[in-house]
Length: 133
Image (tube, rainbow, N blue to C red):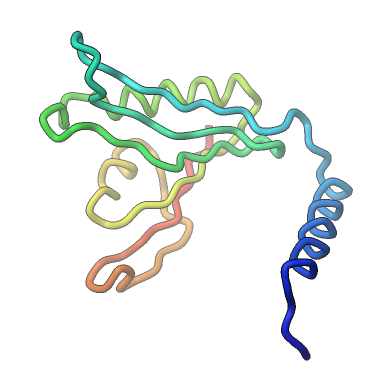
């Protein structure tokens, strides 16, 4: 065994990409579904970063609502909009990751934990989430 370098990583990456294409051909490439919400003055008050990848899996990379606007249904509305659009684009599942301080939001909105990492970060639990749509 010897240390690998950047060129080795590129060769491995190309090989993995080719394998994935052979096993599951890319139907459409990545589709961005990110959205933002502003107030009447144009200030950002909520946003979601999401997309659908080539194998019809949606992923939410982040969802945020400004503290003074929380618990008013804004995050749930953003999430439902992403779910609707993802389904229209052919996605059948949405994946996300979160820590315990926000997990209640996702669980309330129909996500289930498909994995958890206790004590990460220290004193908390991180979750890998999924929701079939």
